Image 1 (tube, rainbow, N blue to C red):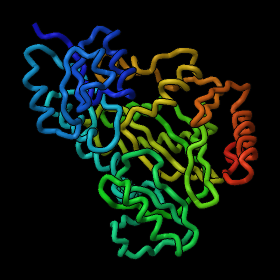
Image 2 (cartoon, rainbow, N blue to C red):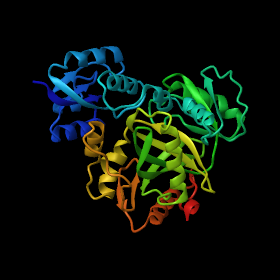
Image 3 (cartoon, rainbow, N blue to C red):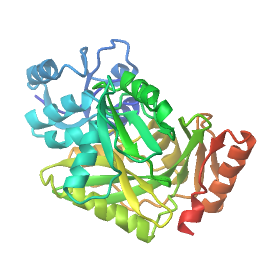
Image 4 (cartoon, rainbow, N blue to C red):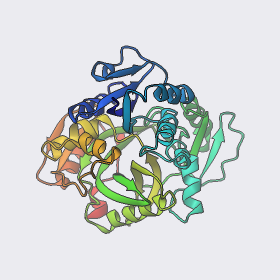
Length: 366
């Protein structure tokens, strides 16, 4: 007799909390990973040892296992090509998941930018440039140069203020881009705000948001320094703008059920520019450590499993106690207010001797 099962695209450390949670909720787990020693396999009922990028063979293998398992959901805490496999699996077995038409938006920054401009959604001006760098850049400096197809988060992203350094920045970004293109955009000075949404039937339910504390070193390199919750945009006009932006985006995909993270650059007057759209369910530091600490123990992985198996909806408008996560040390400090998060962050910048520059986030929304 077939047993209810969740498919996990990947069995590495990032997937482990989802696999464990699915097991604790009574599901069997069928996991896919090319690494036979992946830690998630220890908790899985079925091991499919193959690349998560091998879409055709993964779908075929899962089809052969249908006599034993009744698939209820698919989870993929990943970026890049594995998302295409997760989408194909969801489509084949009629499960909630990323719609294939959305895949370019969550994997290629240039595709997201073009989509936004086409649909009157505010996003920076930009151009996609091939590795040879022959495409002219007719944009005003300073510029942001980043991999178009992200493989490793915040890798080889830089702010270029002088044309003399543009080609080297493009070359570095292309070297780590999954499609060997760089995305070059007009730099918008402001704060980085990310928000998690549950998307269903063309509507986006806001769950929670956080401020990404991003430093810029003296050479223009981008460095992630910390995460602060709740976002300074919480319960403000800026948060409402971000909700409206996401509502506009997902209205174009009425058949999709998924979790998406929208990242915006918020300017000094509260103007919000779309810079990234993610389908990776959130980074390990945020979801695994910061949110449980800030919410006093809520298991958001269970919320994800319930939603993606159509057995419930995730908690919305999650209330987080003011908490600051320092990267890469992983230290979490709980504060009396969000403003104190930024006071501590400012102290960190001063301690680095001026090599890191960062705008004071809390001045934007006070």
